[in-house]
Length: 253
Ligand code: ADE
Image (tube, rainbow, N blue to C red; front, top):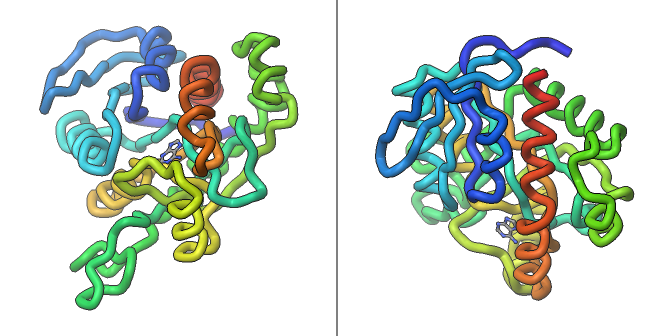
């Protein structure tokens, strides 16, 4: 597996998704900017900047921009959880994005649906070598039974031993998708999308504008329907942190 060089930026939107990563970071400084804390340090001897972006497109977009402008990161990894849009995904599955799009971006009739106005682009491609590396890490985590990170009771409860890896489109928007209507609308609008979250496409746009490689890797917490809130809360509490740390641990080894 090729090694990451330079400084790697790592973003997750919620405390539960970032806290184990922070616990494993040898932090040498914490820089405060825009009501966020950027933890500069090392993981497995690789330079990193780790930040809780908070949830949503503006929060994650500004976090990405600061990481690029202020810390000169060479690549950016977005991790956390996502809701399943495709019926082929189940809770506990992993998704590596090929490209990200903002499902709520709509400046018609001036621009086509989903297009970032005046940028001429709707789908923000993830860096292919980072996708390959992310896929290898996800595969290794699944093959090695989550590197012992997840309690056997939780593996059983969430049926994680059946977890699968997927690669494809991820969409984002400033909405939690938790009704069947919302789910059907996204399915109808974006037929190839596998999963939904609230940050990837915004970070993707920033990384495109600055020409910085990025990738999004997420685990599935819910099925983005009427059951989503209940599943999401249980998953965030018990499972999410182990997946995010497991993936970053594998990525930076
Ligand atoms: N992240 C995890 N699940 C989600 C959902 N259902 N909608 C939006 N973002 C999510």
